[in-house]
Length: 257
Ligand code: ADP
Ligand code: MG
Image (tube, rainbow, N blue to C red; front, side):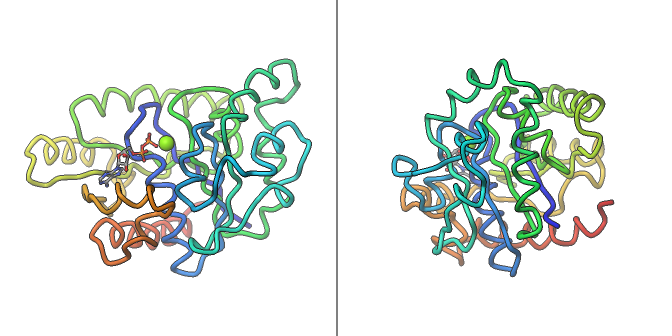
């Protein structure tokens, strides 16, 4: 049975999509069966997995409106080695169309139940907001992976996210937990980043992943080739770090209930 994880942080530009596609590619590389779900209408994770969002015949939108199943809507990214449930601008409309529907926050969970035995990991790339879309992700997940930059305001943003997750845990999904905080775009030469990183560790202990993702330009270049960095330049520092993170996740899920 797949373990389902949201990659979430209310802030934009913190590395959610980069983490989702590179973790997916890293997990595939170490032999895991992976479904990547793009929950952001911007469709960056879809494009970044080599799937053209403008040409999707079916997408997450159709799944949330129950006009298609995941088996029908997913596509295989051969280059990346994982399946993609893609998204494009259409998905923004789902928010409005779901408003009057009962149990609307559980649509993704219900749909995933049908394919969960076909994967080891389902990774959900969340948009930078607490919308009905994100709520669908949080309701479906066993845990949340939180990518964060070690900057001053990062800790402040984290309080909001932790509170949101507590609320979802209490009211909608008792399985939900923060699996871990992932330090991304890290530059050890910057003293402030070291300080925030130390603060994070003393505050959150082993909730902070051991792996640190460095700032690495190859990771930023990869999306323009429609590939995760792990596939685009496997020898680059950033790619190696994400594969190491994939191994850490494989170990971490063994400790989950
Ligand atoms: P989000 O999904 O949270 O909005 P993205 O993953 O799109 O964030 O990342 C924001 C920007 O930072 C993108 O241009 C991406 O290529 C770049 N980026 C992400 N991680 C790294 C990294 N480790 N090193 C260098 N650039 C990165
Ligand atoms: Mg994103």
